[in-house]
Image 1 (cartoon, protein in one colour):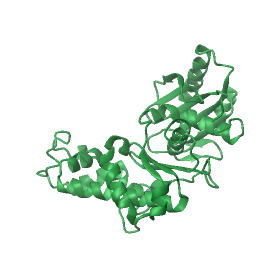
Image 2 (image 1 turned 90 degrees about the vertical axis):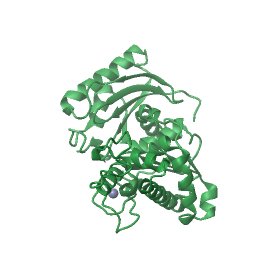
Image 3 (image 1 turned 45 degrees about the horizontal axis):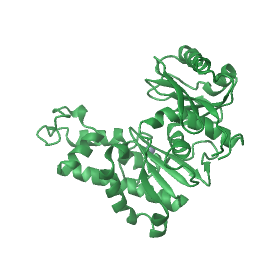
Length: 331
Ligand SMILES: [Zn+2]
């Protein structure tokens, strides 16, 4: 990182919430504000709110003339070439040209990326990957997302969708994924798929020990990823078996990443952040099946230190990466 401090504007878009923040290139959040509406409201209504909030923050902090760039972090699918957020199930927006709209209104260079890429960038600029050059980030929440830094640069691919590690197919005869393929990493480890599989398994098993857990309270719809984790901790056999499969499949995904990229660090997000060693240790135990010792000894597999803070830093990280890619910021 260069000694020169740069200020950036970060905008994090989600279905239910949108946050605008000002941060510097050392990871200090200077000001942040959450909008009342999210991307479930019409774009025409929300865009002026984002612009208004961004301008207000810049004026209030006295930094209006020192912002170098703006970064947008949004859940996929994104049209990276056209700078548009495409239609997704949790958002009312469809092919909205937010990058260019904001660039025009704020008179700043504006960069955008998805939340998994923003996650690896946040680790690179502010987290445990500072100063590293070959890093992979794998995050498991509702779905499974991935971001890849190879030789110091974010891997985007020819159409901007490189790094979709959640959709590595691990078994063509595996469970169906939300994307339509069978046996994706996400189909085994994503929160939505794990919840659906558990609900299927217990549909007619009201008497099952997992159904009697206080947080489940006998309701099928309360069965989720956390139920598997907590059930496994209690030694309930179905949960133990599912947890072991989640960890084994995650190790398989990590192994594929190791063999393909030979990274120095693989950072696990969200689900691993909450599970800690209870997830990391079985994953490491399964790993020798999927990657040689040479790959494993070169690579530290660890859990994010940023935790929920990553959301706040995501847009700012995208902005800093845009500045670095355009040669305005030295890494
Ligand atoms: Zn998939």
